[in-house]
Length: 295
Image (cartoon, rainbow, N blue to C red):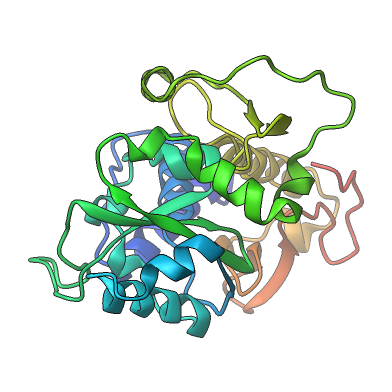
């Protein structure tokens, strides 16, 4: 009989983290779906951190005298200074099952151009004119503004990025891949995304690239979200088996083993002694148990 329940610990950890931010998640589903919903939320919420800022030169000129110049410059400054950009996103980002196709496929986020708080004060008021930006961990590229209609599947955003900063997309150039003949139209792409169809590749100014966001599975969730969730659950199963089969009674008979999100990663710890036994994705506990470190 297991003396621990790491899956239940993980569920409680997720609930506690989201409760602090006032976000609710459905618990009437298995741990895999809960974990996928959790990472789906995290993929939509931008970490407040200083990022290197790039602005498309033509757009930089358009900002001057634009009737939303103050709002645009505020968002750009927030990105540069590491302020919270999420208040300018759609309030739907805190819905665990809401899927942002544009971010999933292309790493492109959109921001509402307002400085006035909405009914939910965590967000600004929505508007029809949006600011679009390509976002990676350490930098952000402001691409331009456009109306809401048809802007969320328009390849022009990636074409603008590739034309002005091609070096930022070089890592998505697959070697020795035949050029695809044509892209979907905006309407075809929108329909495909909403149907869970994965394109995987895209043609930009004569070159074929992997989709920067790596796309999604048929359920609509980002591939990386699903893979990360599966990776963690596989690790939990493996580390649980290792603990049960351990010849060290201090480990196999420990009644205080728990799982939590540590400072760097998930970890299994002794809640009585407050000592960490192992961190994800390692399979070696205190150098006493050996195993394959590749999950």
